[in-house]
Length: 76
Image (cartoon, rainbow, N blue to C red; front, side, top):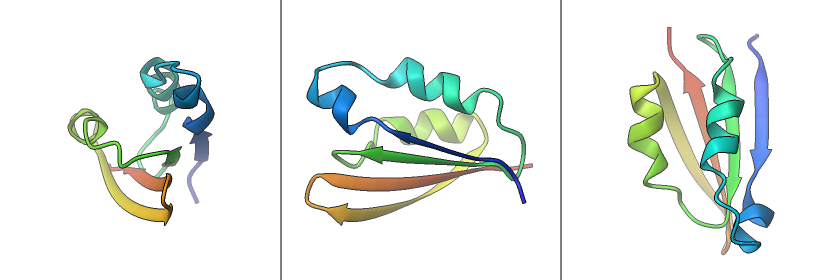
């Protein structure tokens, strides 16, 4: 089983803090098979092509009106 890193950026975005750098730092050390779970207040569509370019696939799930959970898996 790979590493699982979970990050909730809902509070950062509520405070108008851009979480992109925090997300990139969280995924940088991940290896194939590792999982990154992101919690956001909206479906982070602009992030998808960036993560795909870094070798991740993803699944989205809407938990509540302002709570999206995106599971990214680093491919081999």
